[in-house]
Image (tube, rainbow, N blue to C red):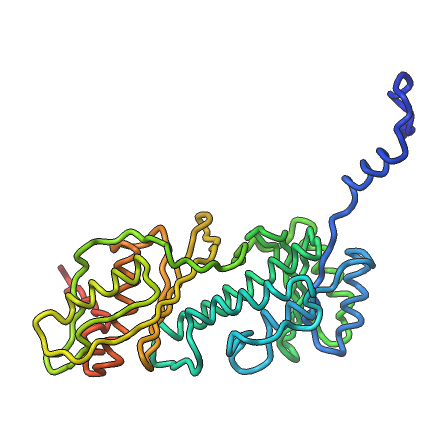
Amino acid sequence: MPLSATDGMSDAAPMPFATALFALALHAAPTELIVLDVDRDARAPVERATRAKLGKDALDGTSVWQPLFAPPGALPIPFAQFTEPPPPGWPQALERTWKDTLAAFHSVVGPPPYPVTARERSMLFMSANLDAANLLWERYLASRGAKQVTVLRLTGDGAERQLSAQRYLPGDGKTRTFSQPCPKGSEEAVTTTVLTRIAGETYMDGTRPVLRGTPAVATALSLKGSDDAAALPSPDDCVLPAALEVTPGSPLGAALTARWARTVEGRKTGPKLACTLALITSPAALLVGEAQLAIAGLQCGDVHAAGQVLAEGNGREPPRDQLTFTLLKQLVVARCPSAAPLFAPKLRAPKDVGR
């Protein structure tokens, strides 16, 4: 026999109406936010099935998600200049967040063009795009009050056409995904199937990058490092600046100046070189937990060097030594192209067979 609203409460006072509403709100379904990354012809049936499963009032974040994670073009990056305006649907209250986030990454990545030959700089450019997109997306989800996100994507063509669904909670790196072939005309039925699977027990566990907060200017950041980091190699016939004058003053700037002095000690040098250092920190979510990423850009004349390192360190060398090496190596090679082979990765010798 089903329980009535008064069972077990005969001696209790009636629940006030306001309290009852509050209790109901606590048990209400979470605010759903959906993304429909599908072609125009499939939009109506996919949305119809999605709202039937997740609620007709589910928020639609497609107009913000697509420019961040599936922009048009051969190279799927959202930011070519790091000065792009926010997409349609971006909350007006977060316009400053958008602008400040891109400005922080622009300060360290430097001005375009971004040469593909400069490995560290091009890698940082791609990483900065991903980091900025994830930071901005998490801020957007928080502003919309999303409690659960479901992304539906239709990819491929013909026999290779697939509809996938991914579900996760804002701020959580764990995901559920499921995909299924989706011939034309079957979009509504397939959408229902994949949403049923990720809500049940038939799905794939996965992860996604999660970045929180906003990147912060970190001029005063003091990374661990050695006081006598080794000089960088360069050919004897190269003329390098006698000294670097790095502004604004910072612990990293002082370390760059000192390591450069050791690099040019006892060799033929040219005039001093003025450099501007930009340093920011960005929160990073790793598989093993949270970390802080230190991202630096060094502009010396027409040369821009860039690099990043985990502030807590992630290798044999201290993080400050890793970062000064990365930045100064780019300056050495830019001033002396013949030095490039000196920094090429060393190949491991093959083991002798039979030993």
